[in-house]
Length: 426
Image (tube, rainbow, N blue to C red; front, side, top):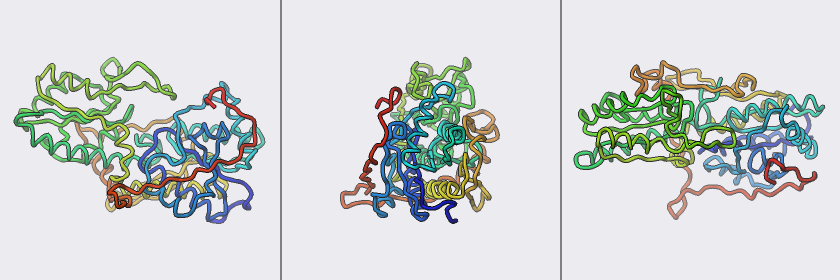
């Protein structure tokens, strides 16, 4: 697809929020595709903060081979941040600063790689550009391990954390089963998912049938019932000899309180959760007397590039490529989303969707994906989840036995504006 303008103008790419095992594959797709159009790509250092601080990275200084390593490197190659821009009404100065930076560096395309909040920011920027008389095409690029973006069938980053979770559940369960006669009876794995239980649901792929682990899955979409939970664990241990539990960090009690609420808030205003696994473990010990172990994979689950899903890695790269094509075609305020066209065989494609249908919306697990007792996943959930963890895309390994991950030079672009940063810490 030919570019809609000449080589005039630059493209700015930024990563936002928690990173994933494959977000850099999206960055590679963006940079590689922009180069085919003769467009120079700048990256904002540490996400939107870099744009506000005019702390930009010139990716044209990186070799083709260096950019290619991003396809198998976890983390955020240019840095990310948890910084939520306030509304235009409450802090117009930050949005105007972004337009000033764009104007100073002739940035005509802005690609923001993130979740719901990032989609909202890209949407606002597209609107502000018009009102300030500066032509800027803003494209949201999907990314979140939580899999909770609206419209898209799945979110880049989710398939890999789903694969990690299912494999970890299976492997840990084999360990527990080996020791259950004289040691641990209950194993509890806590996974990410503040409001949506997609990652916890993926653990259900580890086994199928009443006696296969995980025996209990706890979803944010269902109110936590202590009595029912303990009864399920007790019955499982008595029948099987042991029990594996997988819990979303965001499960709540009947009063709507997080079981693991630490009483603090992050930069987006979300509750900081202090760990639901030890809370559940204490219940099991106190009420049932079983020996337990619990695990909190935390960053491990979203950074495990060595266990990435090939489907996920391919989709992450594809949305980056598509985002540039949409920008070059003159589209604005859209996001490349994944459309599933077939379950078996699994087929998908990329289509544009308006950011207005995605920003500040949250996709939760449908009721049809949860078993009647609320402790497992249905056949419909398996049909949805299983294709997303298919295929392996291992990184290359060096002589030291460790993955050979890429590292960029990340050379800075010369600043042209005075400093700005009362809210950004610069």
